[in-house]
Image (cartoon, rainbow, N blue to C red; front, side, top):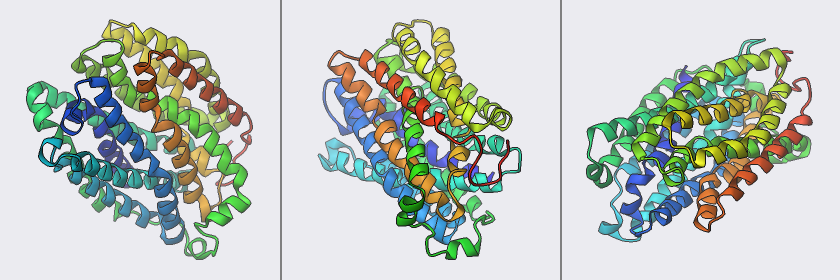
Length: 411
């Protein structure tokens, strides 16, 4: 619970930016075209992702050499600093070009923090999990990750119901960032109570947290994780953070309706994770990953095409929930399937860095690529791009071992 609470706060803080972008974009990028404003905010969203590989390396090294607990405490503290910065930033009207520059700096700090969060939390959860229930335990990483998204969108919906649109655009968008900073302090205190899972012997190993050891002895595992994370991250961000903008910008829904639809979808998606994680304990991680690749390949284009012209909020809810059910085959076991491929001395580094690199390139750019293609009149190309990456995820999953190489084998 302590590890998960920090994970929830980290992702709440990170996603608040995505959900509030439609309100604060004019304050930092004063252009008349709303798509251009969203492109600018999406660009800074992507920049936050580009810091993730550095965070994955830095915090993975800290976790493998100084302990998982230390790494998780530092990462959530850094997220708190980033959120406080955004909450108190002056606008473009006050300080000109310094406003978007400082916004970018805050996002870079948050990206560094989240880059370190994933690998260390995945490693910690895998190491405390009970035999025969590793998939179930691992699923709670995405329960809290999605829970962070859900709380972010819920808070935005609450503000939409209680504040005028003008107030939200003027100053109301700052409230979620203040909330995020405060909850980060609570998570930091909780994480200080964690029991360390790495051993003194492992931490003292001269190869602990070493990049040279990772690429010398575990190169195949690294690139395998990189391969299926690329598709997994892209489709995840397509149907979560980008989907609210897609419903508004392409399907023509109001911001409030789109937020309500996404709230319902994210709640159902969060509840799915333990079930799909437990399924992997029965059928094996490889089977989960193969189902994810096949279904993602077949369903992406039809679902996104249908959503482009959807008018009923209920129909939108059904289509997005279907897509997220497919994504759940991957997200529920995302952490454990990666942790099982690395030994303890480079586990946090291997999981964190491979995930962060793929996430930065394919996940962080999802919104930007989709909006850029829309702006030049080729939005449907994005559907096929996601599908192509699903084919890659399937081919890489096919190469996964049927039995876990590290940690205790459950199947």
